[in-house]
Image 1 (tube, one colour):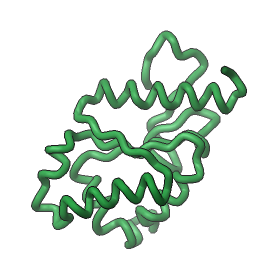
Image 2 (cartoon, one colour):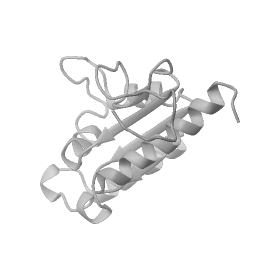
Image 3 (cartoon, rainbow, N blue to C red):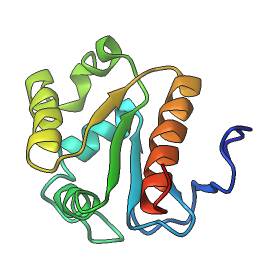
Image 4 (cartoon, one colour):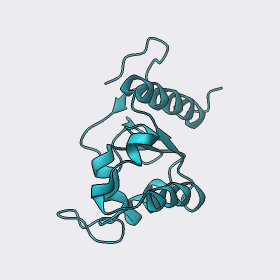
Length: 140
């Protein structure tokens, strides 16, 4: 999916994953990135957080608990902070969104990355995945 001549033997997966939106072939349970757009981020933070989503029956908390067990885990939000906190029609307050970010890091150990730039997001994914992939393979 991503092309980078420096990254050999690294196959980034971005579809048909059981957990998360991106992973590395052969390391699907150890390298996980969850990507959100502002609209589905607020659903993720709000109504899906503690309620079973249809049809999978999985809550946001269920997803976070699984992702937290991975060696490399990331929550990516494709938006600017200003744009992310400017969605008043969602029914989710800005303070709730900020609290969610804090809890993903403190409770689940999942760092957040917020950028409206898709190229920057791809770079973040590749860099994190590449170094984790090498670590898991025992490379330096």
